[in-house]
Length: 448
Image (cartoon, rainbow, N blue to C red; front, side):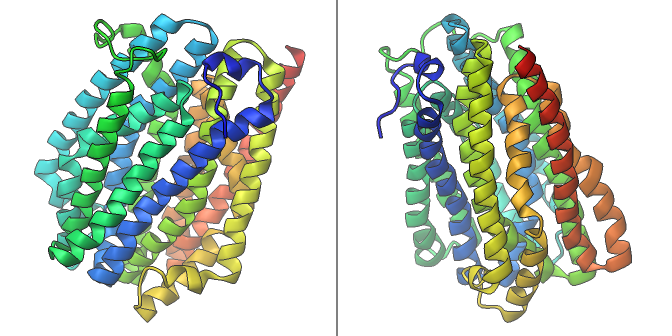
């Protein structure tokens, strides 16, 4: 598939063609990223044990917290690059590239330095028990030592995609999956490193991908490339990047808090295996969520560029197409959860009790999933055109305004079932809010 070679094509080519060109590589990359997470879970579940899967589930809040700081810089910078290229402000786009490197190094090192000394207390707070904390500790200590690499890789890969190279961004992500899938069984089974082997494989795969992405930005023929003078932090670029990235930051921060509540609720009413069940369901749902995120990533540079160029009819068109595609994807997730949940969860474990818990939870979690695609696209749309406040509100509406109260009160009345049902309830309410805000924005576009 031919990819537009210059960013200016975002304002002239057919919207459907552009979305396919940009979204297809992003979807492949995001699907690969979800498989990347699944590979670890499958090898850990089958090679280490059911409790190891529960230990891995305990790490989700800390992983979300790390991702929050990564997205604060990475997503904000990618969006800012798209908008500045649409405005023909190439000098600022270059400086954003340099600033994203410096900020990711600062945030990545600082996060690890703060969390590593208190790792075990943090894991216990996140829902670990004496039976699972060892697995969670062994996994996270490696991940945190490589955290700065993770931040740099994801941040620069996002900028690479926004700079007109979605296929190269896709190749980097696929590369991490392939390397991880090769190293996982070698380290877990061959070297006998257990769950730590999975973490080491993850970090090594990201180091290799980061080296390749950095090599692309050393090409002076590219519109955006590394050179002297761009690495000095600029106040306006930093503030604009953090303002736009605040939406995904708060979303991941809220996700961290939500997963803590979910883990604690499941542990109180179902024990360690219930947490393992949520880990399995999370991985399965993550596949479809990541595909929608791939669509969003394809939409982001198109919407950002055309909004910057004040071509609002093109902005509206790309949004509508993305919403339809996302709804189809999340409806497929609903069908899998309703009609073949046992087949799906059995990939991760042979433990029959863990399979039973996972099947029951999976059906409930995806009950309202056909609406989730619309809600995700709408939130990302406001972020893509630089409307940070609206994006932030939509990002936290599902997690904080609805899901948190549900997780606090419903389990008290309905036990473990109350934890599971809180998720579809929040999805439905958040979708209604997103619909109202999008309708109002469409009216503004029509007037303009």
